[in-house]
Image (cartoon, rainbow, N blue to C red; front, top):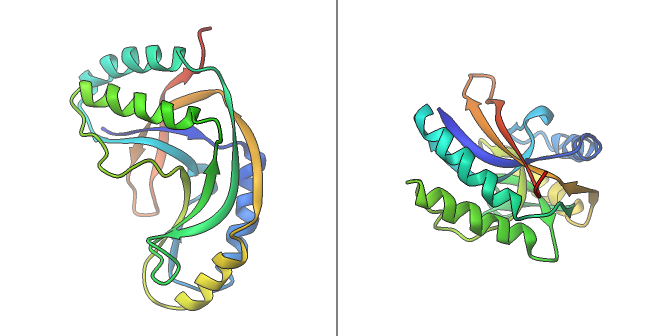
Length: 187
């Protein structure tokens, strides 16, 4: 099973991001856009895992999420990895000023590592992936369109839970299935 832990994005923000992606599509760049139903903010990509590992992960992540109260995030701006000169991944930014989101990421990383998953080598850069560039066609136009949205505000939401998703890879793009929802805070 291909698994990851993520924060779901509210419907109003998805609609707002769709309007932004519509402006980027006008560049006619070769981009594989993420379907709105598949948009999320990844906290930890776990990768392939046997189903017998899920029970231990659920138990451990329930304890982690119990220690975090719901908290607000802001979806704002747009950019690209590694940068606008050679964009490969187009993203919307996730801002959370209190440090709670980063603490949740740290605890998730530690928990997953204790259960045998590999720790992420890169630091935490909260973002929502919107598309992956598949060629050099119209890159300058795409970069200019991204630049025009770098200060755009997409919305706010309260993070109330973390979700364990299973990814089903298909030719038309991945489909995500909720495996377990971890509410934040003790219920």
